[in-house]
Length: 332
Image (cartoon, rainbow, N blue to C red; front, side, top):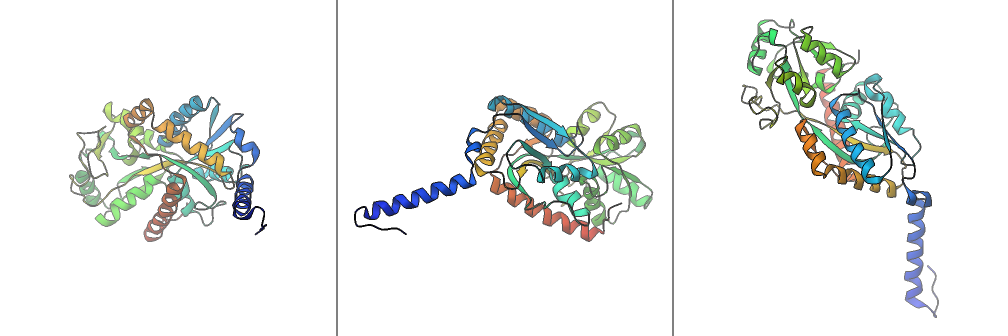
């Protein structure tokens, strides 16, 4: 530390301030202070029309309006979203290519493969949680089941003969059913699809009798009578389906299930940009019109700090890893 008898303590403090300022500049380049000055791409490694895709488009549109800068949403759902997530992780860390990634990709799919080509926990700069996604267990009316209790009875009567659909091996739809059936000592046959949309369509058409679905995706079919809601895996009834009992009310206690979607930037993105995006995401999610729209679709707005999202990601990854190991789930 430099000292002189002319400037004394003031010079010391001034030197510290200069060093701190230089440190901040190294973390946040000058160009970051003008961000954003061109179109931002938000890559969503999910199918268009899925619950996660829907919420991200609503929030991105509001962020773009507030920032007065275009945000283009691009979908890339290959390999359960892993290709899209990898693409985000390898993008330039300048804030112009970010990801809207769900835990179905980071925690479920990434834990299923032997080694993902990105680090789910440390390979991104977390921006903010966007929303929690509520779920419902649905069945084709032809199955004859009216409740979760009915489904369990049918499955016990025909061990391994009752099919259920999912968005793919290791998807939340698959993991949720494993979490439900294993403690109940019930065996059902898994029919994996390459996405949530097609699997739900086949349940609606009667090709497969039952599946777990995000409430926002299944709700229109439930209202039309094309699907029967057997129960919701939450402690309280859903405000969107107030007439549908919880699993506990239907005789299956201790089972709760929900997923989430969040925004991430490539590792190394300057803190100034991450914090700006966090502030804009929070502002959009606090907008009354945005909140009302998301809630009407069964999506709970849930903004967080980057640090809070980092912890959620790490904790969720570890929890799902244990479930997959205990259930012996393997990639197909």
